[in-house]
Length: 337
Ligand SMILES: NC(=O)c1ccc[n+]([C@@H]2O[C@H](COP(=O)([O-])OP(=O)(O)OC[C@H]3O[C@@H](n4cnc5c(N)ncnc54)[C@H](OP(=O)(O)O)[C@@H]3O)[C@@H](O)[C@H]2O)c1
Image 1 (spheres, rainbow, N blue to C red):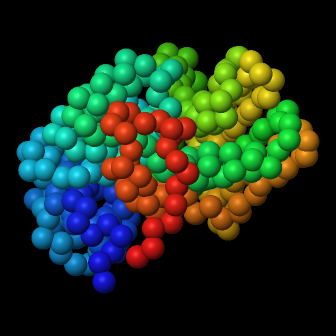
Image 2 (image 1 turned 180 degrees about the vertical axis):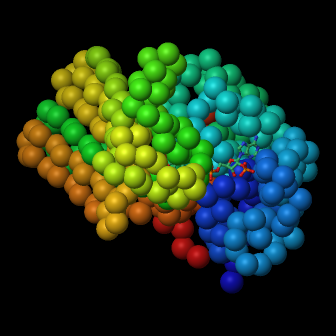
């Protein structure tokens, strides 16, 4: 029986921890994978099915020349590479200029208009010129945006909205662990933040998308980051390294916004190496009339990041050309096999 994605030609762009899961889901949904882009010599030249750990060959080689892969044509690229438009814009441009839509878990594109306005506008123009769409999904989509806006659909008056979530650094690849400065000493972490700043990772984009979806306007905004330090030596699976006591095993990224209309919002996201028995969390509390609470104690972000991303493919292909930040997409939906 044809799957919901049969006939959709997909390029898998980035075959790390997330790209590997996405590959399996694409195969099971019946998408036609027409190309794969990778980087390291240990992956380039090998069959995508093997690199993604599927135990079967897909007849698609991982290639390092993205331009060449995309020039052969595809409906959409599933991009799982990095987190910021400062580096990711080049990858997106390569896809868009070949007339290929992009769905990505790159975090900034969830709402890039204020943190990376030049890249966002440039990509929006390029996508429009080529009649295709660039959009981001991932854990933000269901758990931190659409579940929350659905809950707020039951509010008469909102005063405060406070979100808390936690995920395991070891569920992802080295890109994530390195970004969070896992393994650094407290002094190294503080020096880094003082000298380079700490680009808002997720919490800011989530709240900006949430506020935009609700039709409100930001009044003020503040963000900060706190390191989580090991209270004993901890093994980091994703870096294959021992983290000494007192060194960084995670971060808490927090953003708070007030709106011109009154309601205020706060979201704090803790990403760290878990202790035995811990699980992913998601808690949103609303004060107002009435008070409301939403809690999801096993969000399984590692998997749901990818399942949401893949479920978004038909939405992104159907969306109006341009960069569509997450507030502009309809709520996501299950796609039956
Ligand atoms: N929005 C969300 O919910 C969400 C959730 C999880 C992760 N993410 C983000 O998604 C990204 C990937 O996460 P991950 O856990 O999959 O990390 P990962 O395992 O480190 O994978 C990153 C992949 O990108 C590839 N790559 C890097 N530069 C490339 C290039 N120039 N061309 C082609 N491929 C390139 C790497 O290739 P090699 O292996 O060949 O070096 C690697 O396979 C991270 O930025 C992470 O923050 C977002």
